[in-house]
Length: 338
Image (cartoon, helix red, strand yellow):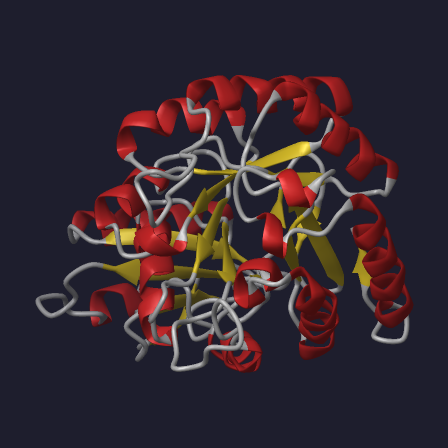
């Protein structure tokens, strides 16, 4: 349900509607707009008479939201969402680059990468302190020590940190170290973890599951938003199909439906989507052309010696060339690389 306030509604009238919703044991989600405020309602509405809200001062109308993902839907929030960090803003009109190695390997490598990215105007660095790997014998990341290295890189260079949270036990440490908390593809439907990041003050980057439908993906975002954290960024990273020519099948066709159904920004990860560095530039450019709001891309100073995912990582020179191509394409599309 969506309560639409009229243009002249005062702050006191809006507060009164919110209070009335809470007295019904429902959750109110005020959403200020450019001309008027709307208030989303979530919870069990079956036993509630909406007419008791229609008569309150300042209320224009009540609208029923048909999508199961209420808060993530454009039915409830028509305007595009902009997710802001200290360093930048993710949303329409911009094209945000989040670049860096798959994992934190050592401090020298992270600081070298951070310095390079800052020199190229990149404001957010990705790197995993905790790494979910298919094999238990593969490098699992540096853990808490890796978070400390990322924090020092941010302190030295000012670059924002995007890193993955794998379990609720490390939530406090990751929240302190990160500017954006990543929920990986294997945890897209880890509902305990989604409820935990709903309580954080940091934006959440939510990767699509290996075989998740669009509705399942948006319902995962709904878990985070229903808990009070509305700063969610979606990330398409490829899905599992019968194809054997790439690591995953990068589903760029999901971008227009996401934009149609949801107000949340969407990034694309062409590194995991293809698994091969030679394919990354073409798919990165295609993501920009398809309307994505940015990229999550793997960059390493020496990919052939990377401890994880070196085959899909660009070196510094390769990333520099891609950045030049992206800027040339972004200009006629009316986009700004940030």
